[in-house]
Amino acid sequence: MTRKYNFSAGPAGLPSEVLLQAQEELLDWHGKGLSIMEMSHRSKEFVSVAEAAEQDLRDLMGIGSDYKVLFLQGGATSQFSMIPMNLLRGKTTADYINTGIWSKKAIQEASRYCDVRIAASSEGNGFTAVPSQSELELNAEAAYLHYTPNETIGGLEFDYVPQSGDVPLVADLSSTILSREIDVNQFGLIYAGAQKNIGPAGLTVVIVREDLLGDVVAGTPTMFDYKVHADAESMCNTPPTYGWYLAGLVFKWLKAQGGVAAIQAANQRKQEKLYAAIDASDFYANPMASANRSWMNVPFTLADDALDKLFLEQAEESGLLNLKGHRSVGGMRASIYNAVPEEAVDALIAFMQQFEKQHA
Ligand code: PMP
Image (cartoon, rainbow, N blue to C red; front, side):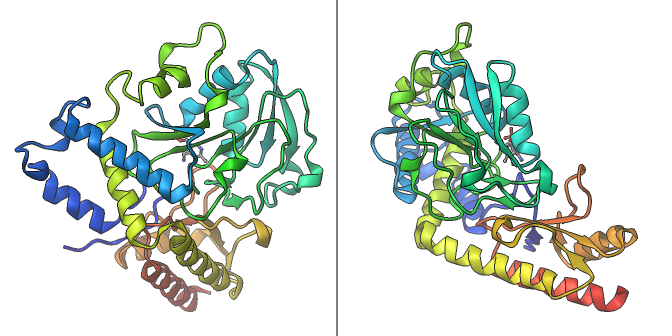
């Protein structure tokens, strides 16, 4: 078996240990004579898997009993509309911080439901630094403040949690959830598509403070009402059972690594050495303000973009996959989520140095 190093931004690599366990249990889950994906979501077997996954996530993130954890479908993109539909709660305006492509998409969708005010934007600095707390123009009448702690495409990450007073804080943690410790109590709602640090695509995790549930915008589809999902423990209809199961295996794997604190330490080392390698060379560049460089998504450019194609070809030949930058920005992007081992980053750095020697 040759598993190559996968730097995909998502769907991203999963821990080999998790895939091996899934393989082992694929045909016959725990001696039941069938696959977990062939079972009723209401069977006691699946319910036990679902409950364990939720509990493990609660343990990993320190999620209190005043929060509901929802296992939904529709991707993070569905959350762009579910959030205003559920959290406006009679108000007509919401604050958004614009730090790049994913915040813009959230803003665009929310504008269909309410008056979106831009509390701050990174546009002025070319999306290379996040606005500081003092630059946030917060509206006390806003239903919530939304921000994107990590911009997956730009590679821009907040180095602080915005303080929004009594206004609930909403965060799109799609590409940074479980990569470092956060205090969930600072948030009204957290959401994340699973396909980066949680599991396969098709599952979306929402962590929402219970007092924010109910009172949706008129016309909200049943499936877009958090309270419906919360009351039914995410089983008001058939949930993405296999994704939920795999997420549970990833949470167990994460616990075995020492939990979020331990993975944070590994992630810190990984990003530090990769940015250090980029900074040490005139051949590679990353323009982000150093405090706001993403730990999970590291975009970089080559001094001569005519070499991009060759770089990607040779990287692939060296077993380094999916380094092509997002189609909207070009260049390269190494996504180094939890499941990307430190040795993959070492191998990437060695390859980059070798490539530079040959082509600089
Ligand atoms: N927000 C962020 C920060 C993302 O990185 C992504 C996906 N890359 C999305 C939202 C959209 O997620 P989905 O494809 O699950 O709808």
